Length: 232
Image 1: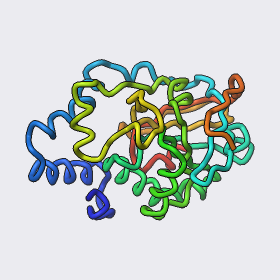
Image 2: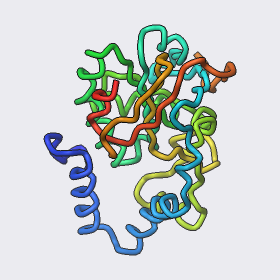
Image 3: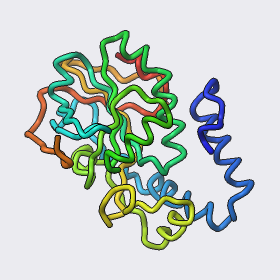
């Protein structure tokens, strides 16, 4: 399991180790089917559809792992907000990424920033994931990917590889509560009230969202990494 990989190495190294481990015991055809959506996204240029630096972030209200409503505009009254979109409890790469964010959380909090992680899974699965990984930041449920869609991140798993996902217990309808097989691309955003933003030096309630127009705050797209607090 991904959670057995040491946390004291860079996130990309942890991911590489997990892929290598999976290649040692998963049938080649199955592994290829599981990785195919990632390759398709990279080749399609779909990331270009994500909100860009300086865009206005859409406001939203989503339930956390305990069903309590969390609203972006309210979080912004307390300071900057780091939002990271992930796929769900079934995704081992997401386990690695969220563990890395947990490690970086004190650095974010020292800069008065909030961190929320958003996926289309139900609050029940978010709660189980938070407890397993000992996460202390909010996991929000964006059922139907309504918020992810506004951030330009949604894609659909091809029907041809859905059986492969089910073979590794990644039956998305069971986790997300719908039959769309839609997921968000992994993306991290810094939303802040500052008028001017600089790109980081590193290259690397209800069960539905209730969009209330646009939040008058700037949005900055960030790549995955545990050093994002350094850009605040």
